[in-house]
Image 1 (tube, one colour):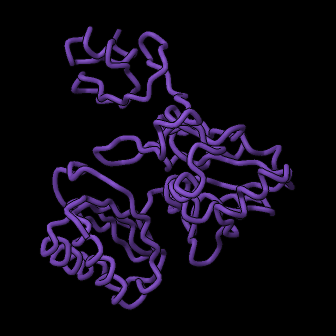
Image 2 (cartoon, one colour):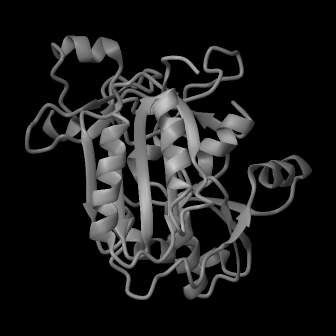
Length: 288
């Protein structure tokens, strides 16, 4: 192992009797390994993204796998630059991804798992199914699966609003997709609760599909919730396409910035030229 940095993306829906105690345990472990990142804990499980030196992230994986209930957590590992997070944040919440929907529990009901390989085969063979992207609308702007349905939500707690949009797909084969899989566990279960019968979820999320099939089927870059903002694989190849557009001039770009208006801070795509024209203080269209 070398001094390269890695980012770990992981989750597990599992009973945690004492989330506050697990929070303390995670704080001690992460601090001992100099890891930064964001971890959400609750009685329903754990959802985390942490970053550190490769040797330290590997040690973290080993230690977490020793914890009862966490033995089979799947860690998605990607390259990073050590600047993904300013600090370590560990919080206890009622849900590890917030919906506010009573009785929505992936430990009881969730969609069938579909691996990246299986989904790729479905696409290659022309199987009739519908990819439903359960990410937030601003995440779609830099990348998405070709011909997928991009649900119009700005926050995952708006999940109930997707039902009228997807009503015509009842009785059809649906595959929900999201970044690493944690939201799809609930999204697919929610659809099943509401009368959708043939519901799958992309196991391991979009990041796993992109890693296995770079620049195939998923167009552009994947929005991620850390300092990298977006990530892609083999982005210098001719097969890679930029699907994002600068919201100021319309030029192809996947460069996200924060609106400099302190009351807004909207994350939007702004090309480097337009950012320079704004003297490094870009304002979204809501303020122009």
